[in-house]
Length: 347
Ligand SMILES: O=c1[nH]cnc2c1ncn2[C@H]1C[C@H](O)[C@@H](CO)O1
Ligand SMILES: [Zn+2]
Image (cartoon, rainbow, N blue to C red; front, side, top):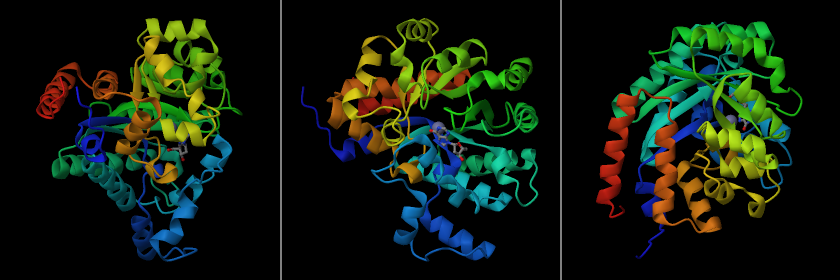
């Protein structure tokens, strides 16, 4: 069988992206326009000059350093118009990589500096995704994020607002931010509310701290998916539990290397996870902060780990299985993607 791993092939491969932050996906061109519209000064007025302010380099040493890039971008994301536009552009960027389904996550409380309510921020992001779906055919769901450095009250407000949008664009809630300083057990009260309201939960865990955080996220916060889970490999019992419960891992390879969730590509556990039967999915995390896109994630994996075309297809279809989607919609998406993959000559 001849494997033709060209860039073009991977771009055309239908894909999904389940872990993508809105504020980590803003194009520098858009920042230039938003700054002019909003009357906010910029350090430089050209795309290339903005990139170092938005993107981490090779030298990024930790998740904390990685997270420092977000303050720059969120300043321009304080109006309904900006949120709607950026969500729309995420759908557009997804379509450029033949991404058929995307789950976009954002933290409503980070977008309230000019007086938007939590509900309004969600409304505008949902509207942008819907317009994107109409124009580019990319299906989408929105995930509302609670932040680790925010109070219980402000996170509860996010959970309750998100619950009101379930079935109207929001598909889940999440917990993000500095994992090493804020352990998941501090958030039991917050996610008890998502349990009461019946909204699905995914939690960033096992990224900047160990496997115990994955255990806590699953057993006490009600996580049915895990963001990253790179350090799950440190504990076999917890790994087996995640496997037995079929809990998908939303892995984001380039980001995981940059944040030092893992020391090097040699130590990246993706092959090990697949061999041990975990449901691994491939995602971008933050295209503009990480300088990546979904095609690039697959390309790097294919280059680094020698994944074959059928293996790459399996990773894509794991993403479909893991999607926060109604089973009937999932079936349609799967059939559509399988037909397209078959047309590309892969079984
Ligand atoms: O990989 C990540 N781990 C933890 N927190 C993250 C990651 N990527 C982005 N964030 C944070 C920074 C953003 O401002 C916030 C909401 O999208 O989520
Ligand atoms: Zn993330």
